[in-house]
Image 1 (tube, rainbow, N blue to C red):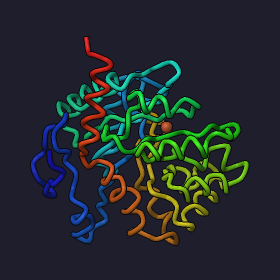
Image 2: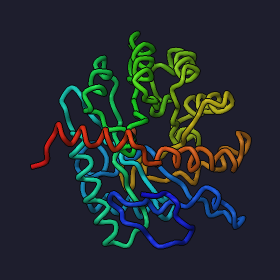
Image 3: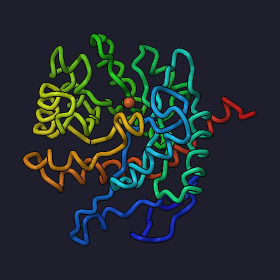
Image 4: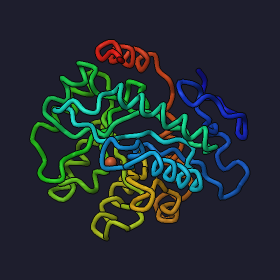
Length: 290
Ligand SMILES: [Fe+2]
């Protein structure tokens, strides 16, 4: 399996094969405005959470993403670990089905499996049990959503323990969390101790209001943001688009920073790892397919 795909090259197999991602060296090499992006947070899988309700909507979302210059999406359905749903294998299977549908439709977007994990005090045990799907199934990064109300005191020690296990926590849209409203230093402290931050394109563009935009700007100025993602939920409401946020970074690092947060850093998440293969095998072994 290789990620080295020449720009404009033939499309690789969508399921399990090499993703058709342009090599970072090719990004912007032609001097055009044609940016290529990878969206690491999107609710594109159909009928599994509050995102896309059906395959038709999923296809529309993928078309919108492709038109925006997004070449790959990590599907991140809300995962409720206390209820055990959806299982990692269910997400993997649905991702494969979506990729087959996108192939049939001729849409050049590849979807990878992932999950947005709601914070819980047993998250460490769930990770150790292999029941948490990592981003792109690589066994390295876990996308975690902090509560919208309150900031549990166990969060710093939980993150520390997750990191001790060898995983990197990525905080999904921290600018929308209660922690940011209570005291942004709570988020900054987690970032300084190794958590990565993913902000929403809508937030940095000001579509979620001034207060949230100001938080994203503060995090950007402190150079603590690793990713911009769409957190797309549908074809009309919050579609998977990020390109419009590019101009919002004009004074925050410009196009170079935009490329870093929407392509280079996300691209690094897609690198196959031996550990990811082992994690996937372990999870499959625990949840045999029918
Ligand atoms: Fe989300």
